[in-house]
Image (tube, rainbow, N blue to C red; front, side):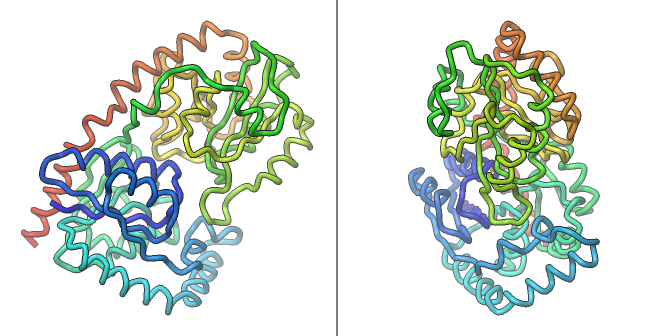
Length: 407
């Protein structure tokens, strides 16, 4: 069975690491051949090629990345809808051309099933894929929060034969937004051969940030995430400002504005905020790293600070697999990944004071960091093992193909 994965971006963020894990896992199941179609060239295609995956790129018009809920900031729903429709009309001819190219590409690749990742690819595949090819959507988001996209997804859902939810929270949300869609719960997995405990190079983070190497014994605490505003880099900075100045502690913001949307911080914004809070000398800004496992191992404490409910929280799973103590913003799917005080510490989304308390608690208690890190590693080995993923995906594809034959 040929399975064509379709992704709207070419960069590698959390959703793309999940996609690569899907490609690897289904490729190990007898009788399945994964392929990849991207709407943007970049490191994702390069990585898939290294895995031996057949890759094709059909570049989307530049304006496509600026369409959607996250790009329509400010104003009410009507104003956001008007702004998005204006952008849509401006890119209409180019989108029409993309639809034709996608139809031609999909027809040439002859997939038995299309596995779509991302809202834009969901909508494009629903319109461009041949009617005979069943479509499966990977549900990475809370669609009820996507006021502009949700109605379009409901219309496009008629072409879809199955959905894969990455958490129980996402599955419940999708059941409300996309009634009648058969949904399979398949939580994300982690490459446990790559994300694994080991010695970390904290000095590397200091060099990348252009800061002097921290003294031995420094407790390094960091947030690893794209600069989407809801990832909570601002909350992390506010929490740091509440902590006593301590030469044995250093803080790191690792990442960058990965996706081409408006709803992102710039590093200049975050640096300015740190300066206003008088913590600039305590915070290191490290660019996006292709291998986040190196960042996790370089940290003593990994912070997750999302201000909105997290659909899953891949950075949590990856940091746990690396055996690190993790502080988690416990909302949405992230709440399903840990037990308070046993495998991680939690705080309420957006609560800088609660986050500061958790950070200080771990900084002052290396034995607690060690205990939580060990428990997190054991939990990750059980909960996020990719060995289960290929079999689970194969079952979804077979059911989607069966439903398509019955229609």
